[in-house]
Length: 465
Image 1 (tube, helix red, strand yellow):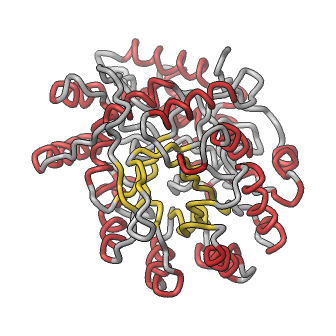
Image 2: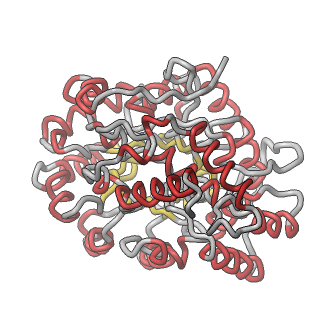
Image 3: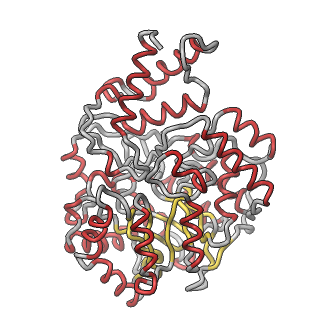
């Protein structure tokens, strides 16, 4: 069966209607589509057998639960040509993960166009309930879902889709986003009484651990941690990788360095759940000369394994999420974490040097989450940004016609652009409506980047670079 992902060319209204599903809709801009980008997770595959009994586990300090350091992120389940999730393959991946010690599965009503929770629930239901911990989120991003009624419907629907009577890890999803992050947070969780409701559900045992995932305005992160005595956060999900550890702000001033986020959690003994350990795949698709250095240092490890070892090295990390679409993604990460070999001081310094080298080859910080989609004008925003990044990493980004590699790089960019993104969905069709900006967790000025990429492509077409 084919696992090719197809993005439907539908209107924003149709997109909203498709995922509304009664009162439980989370809104179009919240939905992350599944992906099948084979190279976005592991880079060069590591070698060797996959151990079945050596997975590293961390202890949840509240419950004493043993949680696998590798967590399964369910945002990128494989799909069929029809666009539906390939349930047979999902079942195989989940079976293999559990067999090899993975027991943490993270999903959301927003993932895979609203289909992830159901697919995850079907796969997990085939295993004893004590073999896994399931995490999901109250993903009430869109304003029409801020009401108490809509939020409650979403919450109860998660239990139905996942086929469980309790949720082990429940998150307030993506707090800190929007142009007025504090007002948005209050509307989504405070004014409608939903945070009080979730705390009561925790007391009743229907929620095991309550936390939040953070993007954007650090004032929200600080505010919620300042009220830790009131809310008693059992965990917090943050973006952490060896680039964002100290350089997040150097690519976007609104981002927050992971070093700060992690240390603030560690001060309060709040476990960290890690998302984006590969920075949307960019730490496995690094520039060729950087990949060469990583592979020379550890020939038997994949490029991606460096990033996963970094994320797992910190003792306050409970689990590291990876959206493993393919079996080779899963197997490579299992090798890395079975067992985990924490980085030593010399290796940490080496990755800091690697991060600094990456700053000299700046890419657009798109994580392919698709929260910006669908574009009302049909633009494949992630496709455009990822092609641009790919050309940077592969050295196909000429500065002028005087570059020695100009002709080959020009052809690679233009031909690859048309193959990756249909012309009617390319950057030239952006009108700058700016509806996408507030939904981007990385705070990318998307219209500005669309204009930049379009101008670059036109200069290549006209040979005027």
